[in-house]
Length: 227
Image 1 (cartoon, rainbow, N blue to C red):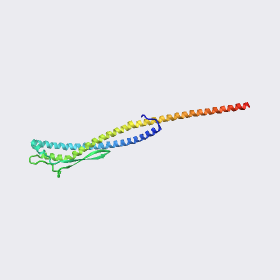
Image 2: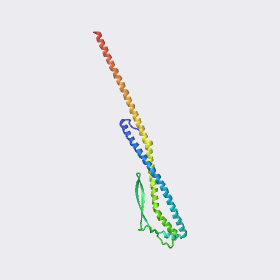
Image 3: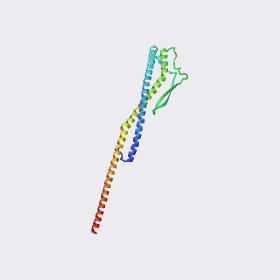
Image 4: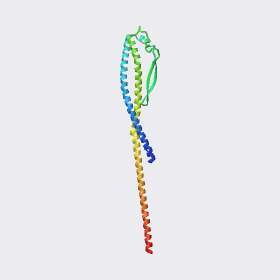
């Protein structure tokens, strides 16, 4: 880092290093917890997806059988005007500083089981089964959608946290440590230089004092000899 090697800068960098070290630990802890949450969610998401896909396959089979047993016109007419509707509500909950969606719904009709928009005389039982199964599957589909979005959000936050941990661990903290070492060495070098200069000045002062003393002694001897 391009800084002036002063004691004030050294103190500032040591504070920054302490802050970066604490932040690195916190970010590592967050990354580890996010990883645990993500893995647990991924396992649950896989189980739920498998369950939903299995139930959807049964719905499609009943629809296919109904399509084979009923004319296309009667099938389309039976499903043209749905009798039941839903109002979707979206809320959020916080997981490790990540807001994930929570879906809920309520039916527009007073009776949630009132889902058939046709009479039973012209339709097959397989169509009734398919619609009943699809209606029962709707909450699981909403839960799966929420889990899928939650998984994507946690994965994005986990990747962002991982990049921050790596930036602190491999870039910022090593730079701060290297700069602190450089400034410490520079200050030590300056201190040794100052001590060397002080010792030289002291030697010069001692030499001058000795020379003055020798000169005074010689003058005294000369004066004594002249008498």
